[in-house]
Length: 201
Image (cartoon, rainbow, N blue to C red; front, side):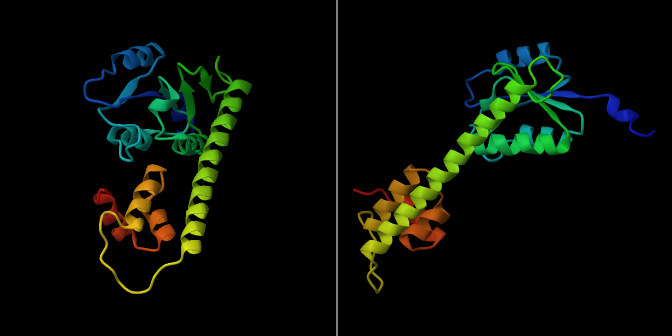
């Protein structure tokens, strides 16, 4: 059969809404109008959630030459880093990508492809790097503060008003993961989770 089977490119759509009372109808209509043969939809799932069943199902279904279509970029990735990872994965697997409302496509032969699409990917890459740099700087700064204050020897009872508990909450609000918080305040990830269940006074 050779490669003749790849002639039949499949255009797959993906739609997502964050809350149960939102409706994917608008996204679905535009995805159907763009020629999507099948549309995967995650309903009532926040964009920050790691596990999105329908997105994962679509990613497993994709083959070289297929095209993924979304209503907007923010429907696809959890954040800019995740979006960039998906775009890189599509490129490596020979899968095309199109965002209708953002007006970009990675297929250079399409009406939305070419230089503009590459510029958008470059911008996304820049923001992803910015996120990584900011996280790294916050981690280093926190570790430096912890080192300058030093740590007392011996075990003491930890209450909700303990400095480590308060610092854990501050760092969590800044977007750091429990593992990174543990490195900064010098404790295990399990202890950090316990600290985060305490509400400082």
